[in-house]
Image (cartoon, rainbow, N blue to C red; front, top):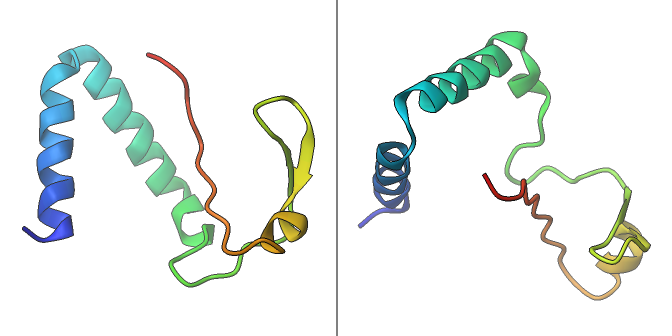
Amino acid sequence: MALQDELNALKAKSEARIPAEARAVMHRATKDLEDSGLVDKVLKVGDIAPDFSLNNAEGVPVNSPTLMEHGPLVLSFYRGGW
């Protein structure tokens, strides 16, 4: 199965668990973001991110150039529990 097919199946399964009212809010928020033009400004695959500093899970600031000294960097945003 192709990655896009897997992602589509995962999305459909996730949406089936979400109440219709909450799902409508999520879709509306996504459309608002798309309509804002912000999507055209985000980094695309292959783009190089600007240097940044963020707090780690323990609240200690870390910066991307220091982390990159150890190899490629993957950045993940966790939105927390619903």
